[in-house]
Length: 360
Image (cartoon, rainbow, N blue to C red):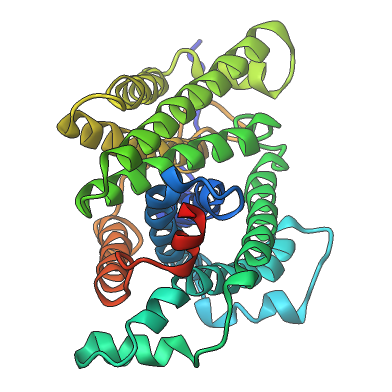
């Protein structure tokens, strides 16, 4: 007798746009943390870190929601989140706090830059016109910097909680239904934020102290992410929870073994090269960004190829159009565009009153 098992091939629901959103918004909210040593604790050696992290926070806070709008399939209907609020839904909570976080991050970066904007008033050309407009008068605003930093941090932590929780509550997918998912998202976002800040600092010729500090952050955040993976495997082998069920589903999959190998290898690259020469530091930053992106891709995209019910795995091929490769190239192009505009048109390299205060 021949027994034939048929498994339907079901298309994924969360598209690569979701990966881009979780990637950029996670980096943005954790970049806020990197600005705090200089802003809240007056550590003058962290001023370069704060400057690079502020650029990362600002640009990613703009690009992330764009990717989210593209992922909801019908962007023009985003207002439904506000017409039908459901306080018990993490997605509804996110719809409320995400705009608040974006506004707070914009205001935070503006307050940080405002002394330099005032210093640049009177200049001619496009840069001068922009700085004159953004200065918005000559009133004193440096006392607002610390309170705004704290508010932005709190809103960012709420976003971190919502993004991790809305995945972890999906009990029908064993890989997602784990309390470690929010923790893993957070640690890899920290790694992505430090790595991207390191890349920005390297390309904008920050001093060696800044590169060393960011390299140290990248080193420890990479180890922290690896530590979460170790805890996941400990739980998988020692308990009967979601981790153990996920391991039972994935342990014989060559694709998932390869995924895990890539994560570990790039995490090690990020850790080992973070305190080397300038070229090795650049490699460390790129490796950290790869880990931050791949961890979300494997969980979201490859995670949806694991059937909720049934045998085998679904197949997924990255489309070449806007829902796949072209869309991802577009969103990274948008990030590059805003990064260039923000860095070139705003006076990041000027001394600010905040910087002078910290130095004193």
